[in-house]
Image 1 (cartoon, rainbow, N blue to C red):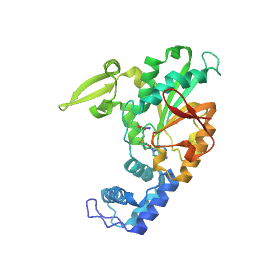
Image 2: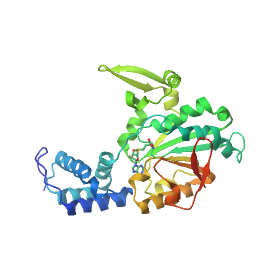
Image 3: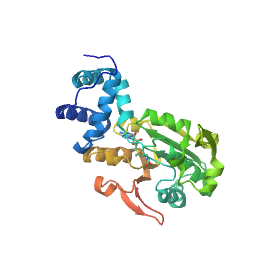
Image 4: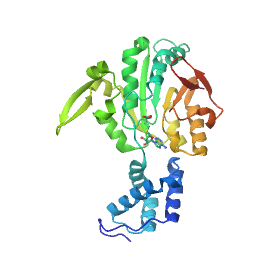
Length: 284
Ligand SMILES: C[S@@+](CC[C@H](N)C(=O)[O-])C[C@H]1O[C@@H](n2cnc3c(N)ncnc32)[C@H](O)[C@@H]1O
C-alpha cells in the first residue's frame, strides 16, 4: 500500500534484496554482489520513501508494472558514473598514433570512421576523444569521422549534453586543451568549465543498454569501441554476452579498448590482443 511521501521506510530483507538484484540483473546485466547490499538498500529505500511506499513488495509490483519509467529512474540511481577527461590517456594516444592509421588502410579516402564511447557516462570520454582527434590525428580531415556516445543512464546523458564540468573532471586536461576548448565560468563562487560548442556538437549521444542485443544492433557497424569501466559491474555471463554483441557490432579489424582492470582474454576468446607502443587493445 502506498503511504504519504516522507514516512519512514520499511527495512529491505535479504529476500527482497535478492528479488530486486535478480530483476535488475536481467534488465541491465549489472550484478550486485552481497557486499553491495548497503549501497543498494540505501538507494532502494530512498526511492521507496520518495514515492511513498512502505513495503518492498508494493514497490516491486510498481517497478514491474510501470516497467520503463520506474526502471529507468532506478538505473539512474544505481549506476556508478565516475569518470574524468583524459582518463587512461594512453589508449587515446594509441587511437591517434596507431589504431586509426591501421583501420583507414582498409578504407577509401573520405569514408566514414565510426568511434563509439560506450559507456560514456557524463561525456568526458567521448569529448576527450574528439579533442584528441582534432589536436593529434593529422589525417582527420581526410576522413568522415563520427563519434557516438551512449550510456544506459539518461540523467548522465543529459549532463553530457549540457557539458558543464566541475574542477575535478578537468584535472587531467592538458593546459592548452583547457584553454582552447573550455570556457571557465563562476557559478555561486564555484569555478566550472563549459565545453565550447564545436566540441559539444561533434559527439552524438544516445541511450543504449549494452545488455540489449537490439540496442547494440541499432548502432550499425563500428570501427573502434571504447568500453571502459563498465564490464567490472557485470558478472561473467553478461560480460561474455556483451563481448559477443561488441564483436558483432565491430567491422573486421575493428578495435575495442577496455578499462585497465578489465581483460578481454578472461572474458571471451573472440578478440586477439594487440600490443601497440602506447597501449594494449583488442581486435576483431
Ligand atoms: C564508471 S562509468 C565509466 C565511464 C567511462 N567509460 C570511463 O571509463 O571513465 C560506468 C558507466 O556504465 C554505465 N552502464 C552501466 N550499465 C550499463 C549498461 N547495461 N549499458 C550501458 N551503460 C551502462 C553507467 O551508467 C555508468 O555511466
